[in-house]
Image 1 (cartoon, rainbow, N blue to C red):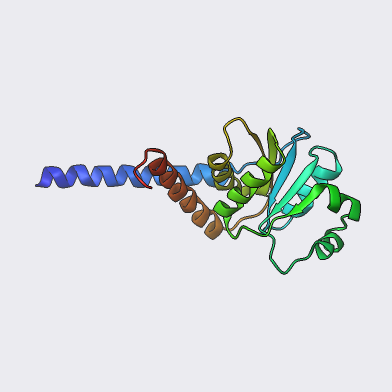
Image 2: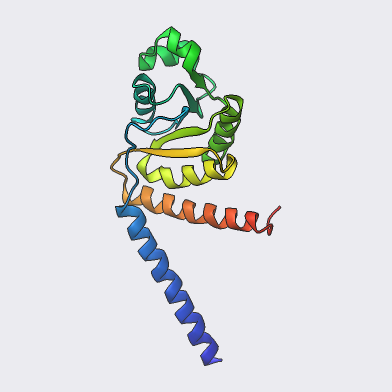
Length: 187
C-alpha cells in the first residue's frame, strides 16, 4: 500500500509542478500585438479596454477589409456604436458587422466562424486582450477550417494575478475539453 501511495504522491507533485511552471510561462509570456500584416478580415471580441479601437485602427490602416465586432450587447444600435467610436456611416455600411449572437469566448468563435464563411475569408486577424488571446485563438481555430489563417493581435494590458489565474485555468479546461472531444470521448 505505501508503494502505491508514494507513486500517487510523486504523480500529484509532478502535476502541481507542471501546472505551476505552465502558469509562470503563461503569465510572463503574454502574446503581443501583430504588425501590419494584411488579412481578409478582423474579428474583435468585446469586453476589454482598447480592443474595439485596435480593430478599428486595423480597418482604417487597410490591414483588413471587413470587421466583425463579436459579442455586442443587443441594446447597442449601429448608429450608437458609430457615434461612440467615431466610425463613418460609409465604413459602417461597407465594412463593419456588429455581432449580437455571442455571449462568451466559445460563442464568439462560432459567431466568427459563420461570418468568416459568409464573407469567404482565407485569413482573419483576431483582436482581444493579451491574457485572453490563447483561449480565444484556440476556440476560433477549433471552429474554422484549418485553411483559414489566424493572425493574433493582442491588446497589451496590466492583468491582475486573479485574472491570470482564472484565465490560465480556463485555458487548461478548454484544452482538455477539446482533446476529449477530438478523441470522441465526448459527444
